[in-house]
Length: 437
Ligand code: ADP
Ligand code: ZN
Image (tube, rainbow, N blue to C red; front, top):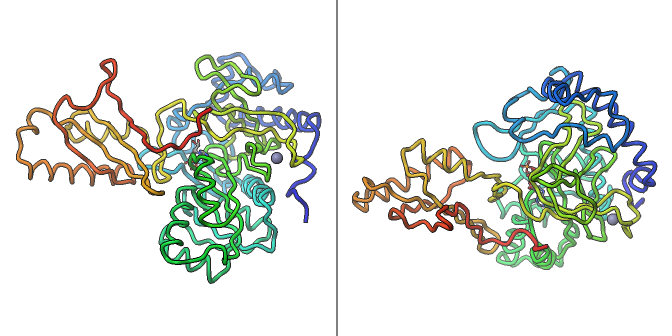
C-alpha cells in the first residue's frame, strides 16, 4: 500500500507543480471570464483580459471574491456551467435565509472525493478499513465529503451521520469502525460518552480520527487521542471551495498540505490585499484551478493562517498551511454552525428589542453553550418577572428558527452590557478554540 493516494502529484517537484498550476490557471480564467458575468465585469473594470494571465505571478492581477459576492448572486449567479451539467448541490452550514449555494459537475465531485481520499491515506487508512462518518449528511459538506473520499479509496463506508450518541457508540463497537470522521468537539463528546458508558476504547478497532469543520487546539487533540485511543488528524475546508479536503494533515502533523493541483492558496494582508510571504500571518485566499461548476478565483476566506513551502518529512511537496489561527471577521462556529452577531441583531430588531446585546459562548466538557444577554428597553424593564420570562422564551424560539441553534436568552437591565471605549462588546468567547501564535 502506498503512503500516498496520488503519489505523482503529491510528491511532484515545485517546478512540476508550478507548471501544472499555471496551465490550469490560464484555462480556468478563460472559463470564468466566458461564463460568470461577475468575473467578466470585474476583470473588464480592472482592464485585465484572460490573455493577460500567463504565469502564477499574474494571479495578483485578478479580482478578489467575497462571501458578499456569493450572497449577491444567490442562488446560481456564480455557476459557470449549464444547470444540466450540475449533478450535486451543497450549501454552507448554518442558517436560514441566504445560504451560500454551491454546485458540482461529475468531474468536480471526483476531484473532491480524491482530495478526501488523500486525507484518509495520509492518516494511514487503507481500503481494508471501515470508515464511520459522523459528520452531518445533507447540504452541509462534511458528511458527503468524507463519504466520497472513503468510497473513492475503496473503504467500507458507514454513513451514520451526526447525532444519537448511544447509537454511534454501538455501531462503533459492533460494526468495528476503524476510522472516525466528525467535528473535533463531537469527537470529544463521543470520548466522554464512551467513558460514561463503561466502554474500554482500547479494545475497539478504532485507530484514526479525521476531524475538522471547526477550530480546535492541540490540547483538544491530546484529549481526543487519549479518550478514544486513536491518532487524530486535522482536515480543513470550506463550502465555497469544495468542502472538507482543501487541505489535509499528514503523519508529521506539522500543518495541513493544500491540494495544490486543484487549489492555489495565497496569504494576504487583510487591509491592503497585498500578498504576504511564507511565515507571515494573514488572511487565507483560495483560487480553484479545476472546478467547473462553481469556480471561485481569489476567494477571501476570512480565516487567518500562515503557509510554508519548507520540505515536509512525509515526502509530500504540497505547501502546508497552519491551523486557522483566528478570523478577520466576527464569525463564530458554535456546535458546528456558522454564526454572525449580525444575525442575532437582525432578530432583535425584527422583534422590536434593543440591539444592545452580548453573546457569551462557553464550552463545558465538549459541549458548546451560547447565551445572549439583551438589554431591556425602559418599557420592558417595568414589566412583571413573569412577562420577562415569557419574552425570554419567545426570543429563544425566534433564534432557534432563524439561526438553527437555541441560545439561552437573558433580558438584563438597561445599560448593563459592558462597553469598552463606549462600544459594546458583542462577543465573549470563553472557549479557547484557536492556538495562540
Ligand atoms: P465546513 O464547516 O463544511 O468546513 P463551512 O463553509 O460551513 O464548511 O465553514 C468553513 C469554515 O469552517 C472555514 O472557513 C473555517 O473557519 C472553519 N473550518 C473548517 N475546517 C477547519 C479546521 N480544520 N480547523 C479550523 N477551522 C476550520
Ligand atoms: Zn507532510
